[in-house]
Length: 186
Ligand SMILES: Cc1cc2nc3c(=O)[nH]c(=O)nc-3n(C[C@H](O)[C@H](O)[C@H](O)COP(=O)(O)O)c2cc1C
Image (cartoon, rainbow, N blue to C red):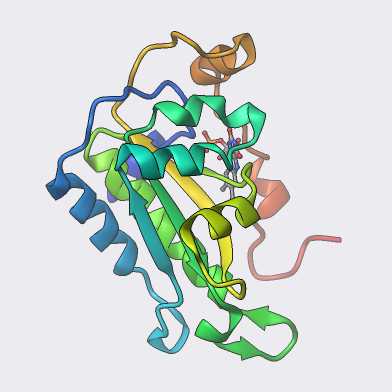
């Protein structure tokens, strides 16, 4: 594989995290990678909270849904937030604040691969708990928490999650999602 495809293909939503701490340098590179994402009118709508201190991590743990128990091992949890007013709203429903956050998150995930880390975005958390615990103003949308850590062991993972850790990547056939030169989808 050439270009960045190897890193892109290597990235998986792994759950077998180690609790080994990450260096400040690594965290800084992850966060810088996120901020290098493109955004509409360069509005940079993303806001990140990188959480490593035990007391702050516990506050985020309290927001996680039951199925995300494994993320409590992560030495770094990154909360990603935006406000709709931080980016353009253009015709025909094109709202770019969340779009920009997605681009930034993917940069962080790809940098994590190159650092030998797992980085796993999650929607399974209660954003109101996060906002209250950290006094984040109500108008923010906390769109994801990202669990980041070194690869660890399968200890503590549910059977389902052990199987997912070792399973194939699930993707639709490309013909179902990609067309060329004329529109092919219902
Ligand atoms: C926005 C978003 C939210 C997700 N939320 C969760 C989650 O709460 N818990 C979880 O275990 N995985 C979560 N995932 C991971 C997806 O399940 C995973 O990316 C998908 O199954 C594809 O697997 P892959 O990333 O290994 O290719 C989320 C992924 C994204 C992009």
